[in-house]
Length: 115
Image 1 (cartoon, rainbow, N blue to C red):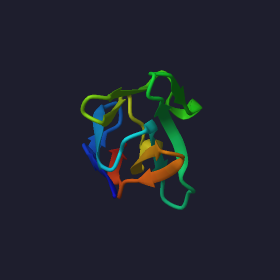
Image 2: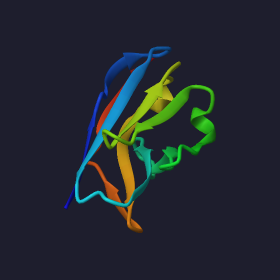
Image 3: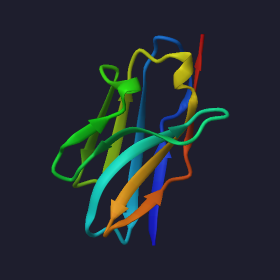
């Protein structure tokens, strides 16, 4: 079994910052890409950012210059530093991990950005 547990969501004013964390545990040998997706009200789930085990990163245009993804391979944890938050960033943020060609999801953490 694989567990992905997110933390760090909450309510923040526009222009503020939040740092999300996601810890992976269980049968996670062979874990490759980790990342974050989000689903806003009435929207489909969409990519925020991913980071490969070797460190290569990929960002959606919406977060470039404001969000930074990083990972600690020793701790099996991925982070998302979000700065200059906007009301349109309001969403449930889901952690994602690709492990031996299978994708796994966390339960999500809510980020609410007030104007």
